[in-house]
Image (tube, rainbow, N blue to C red; front, side, top):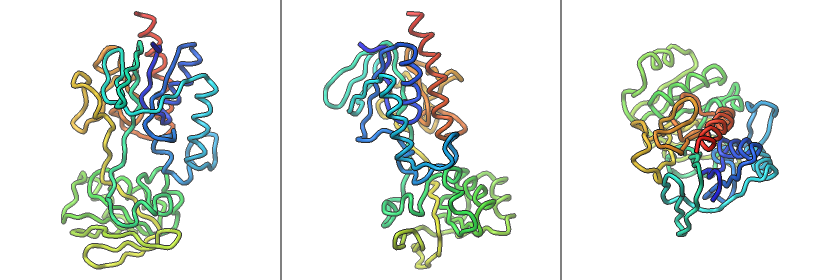
Length: 295
């Protein structure tokens, strides 16, 4: 039996592992992907993580993993099927026991699933304006979506980019009116309603977006903002979530289920960045220590 099992080897899970190993606890991290790092692996360059003026997502992820390995964390490759109070069941049939379980499985951006999307991720296509917007300074970009996240991305980019075009499949935006008003008041924004992206085109980088209407939009970048999905299909009904499926915790990352904690993008929170995920790892370590010491 381990003291702590961490589900997910993204920034949150790896940060928690480092802190908990420094507290002399036995820690294992379960990760279903071949590489550790979570969503940062899809970031071509990162410029907003303190201490690195510029670093690739893969390089930063590797540094995070090496730090956790150096601290003594154990890595288990596998996909979680179910979690119980003191154990985790994997798809391969194994059951691993622990005194405390930390869910750090993250969330995944919803993809359009159209031609060219996969090929141009990190080469013009992004899912996070605050992460990658600076790479498109004084350039023309498109934002795809019509909800609050899409408008927030578009507004953020309007302060950086030469031109921001919002593409939405419906006539009316779903975002809050105040966000829509701010967007339309900007001199460098454009709205294309009742249309959808059909294909992303370019050579080594994105240059054009072909729309279902037949129009071709020139764009140096495309920010897809159609929502995220938390990775929580393995959790029990005893763990409370919000209407969007994100795990509800208090400020100490404690869930509604005794002995189970949640950190990073999988939990309900207003800001999802690498630095906030890593911070959750520090916060939860103290909560876990308090819990284990109370047993």
